[in-house]
Length: 243
Ligand code: URA
Image 1 (cartoon, helix red, strand yellow):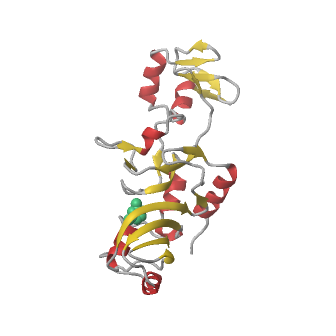
Image 2: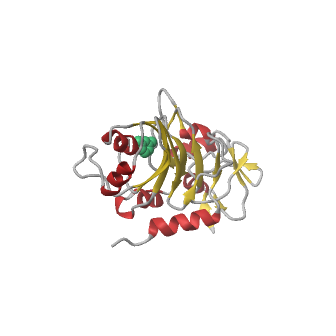
Image 3: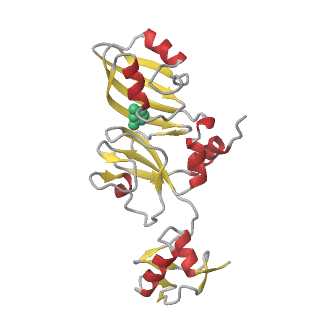
């Protein structure tokens, strides 16, 4: 299908219409090996080879990345002080990617990065109850009583108590290790839940979100594209009807 070159570049997230026109003027774009000079020229997005700054562009409306967020980077697209998750995504030139939800500066683990706003919105919708599992180290002895309290919901200073959460104790002592599964995403939720029962989180890592699991071989700071299976199961969860 024929498509305007500037529209093609914009849809790939290279920049706004105005920006991509500037890039074309600056001779940064080629079509089938020839420098493009007209934003309005028509291309076939499936057969023509378009490059931007020397990189061949694959027409794809949406991209999905599974990122292992390290501690010390912020879950935002811009920050004046810290590195952002976007600084790690060096293989893509899209400018419209964003992290789905937030992890605290010191939290590690699974973070989905995409430009699919509809999917992101659905995954974050409280009505969808998407499960998020965290591994945490806790200062203090986590007990069966905490398991029951978390199952019932605790007061973290919001209007309502937290929704039922599943707490599994991996080890219990002066420092405890746990897995906690929640279906909400309130600000600092896990830390506030433990604080509510008199304990403090000293280390936090998200190991799963809905059907996505952090791969054991994905180092902190590394990322990879979602597999087709992962994307299909994510869409099933995100787009399912809720009553
Ligand atoms: N809960 C927290 O307290 N922090 C996170 O980063 C995620 C969940």
